[in-house]
Length: 350
Picture 1 (tube, helix red, strand yellow):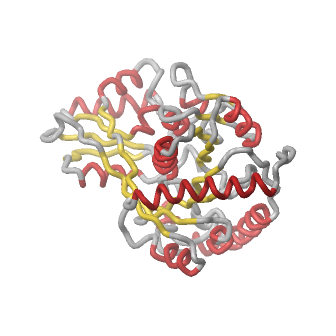
Picture 2 (cartoon, helix red, strand yellow):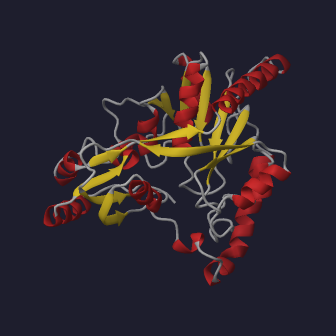
Picture 3 (cartoon, helix red, strand yellow):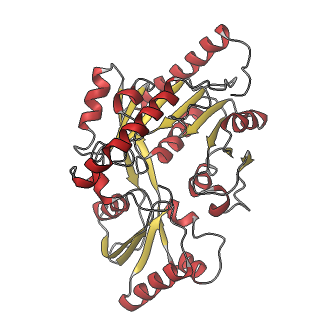
């Protein structure tokens, strides 16, 4: 659903829309199950950890991938990211260049990932994985790719927004699920519960029944100096803009006006002019997310003006148990070495 908001009924109690689309969801889910169960993934000669989710958008995959890569580096590896570059036009495989690439070319999330480690955008994930190895990477963190399984991963960590959960629990197009939960959890190794809320309770229980470890983490915002007494115009085009608004208010800031856009929204001059006019008329300070900010970069006119005026709220994903995080990385490495011993030859492209 890139570039548009998920249908509101996906995150409400099931109604006529969800029930009427349920037969299509069953077909979609059956096809997804078959693809996952019959995938013939390309094997990479490096540890591969996949950060996936069970639903479309808004689960916290990208901040999780960033936190994992930082921890991987602390353990002595050279991490790199492999991503499809959702929202971008570049087919890849392409090494993201922070000096020249734009969100329209490579996607917004790869620009955030590339600040941390080498990032390859590639629709052909096998080709992208090979290119990462050419750049000296010895531990690959996949941002998404859990359901497609085009590249063999040694470990799959599923990110779950504890507040948003699984929405209405139905499968696309009746709801946000990419495939039946039970079928997805068979291919997962652990669940990461992000934040607080009752939305993820059912998934946590399903993970526990399947004997999958459940980790916990929180998104911790940075401090925005000088805005303690300011009135903010908060705007965002992410999977769940209300999460950003709640994070701001939870940190003690005052939101006087808010504006939501669809996930991966490509800001237009008209959008920028609307936000600028509102900010000036009401003496507000525009604030947005890091992911939104990269989509305002390297553009001219009103968008550049908005970018200059806007404050950005960075967030860090912090694991509750740092020892468990280190153990997880060690487990990925052990699984890779076992795979390497048992199957020393690299398979051909799928």
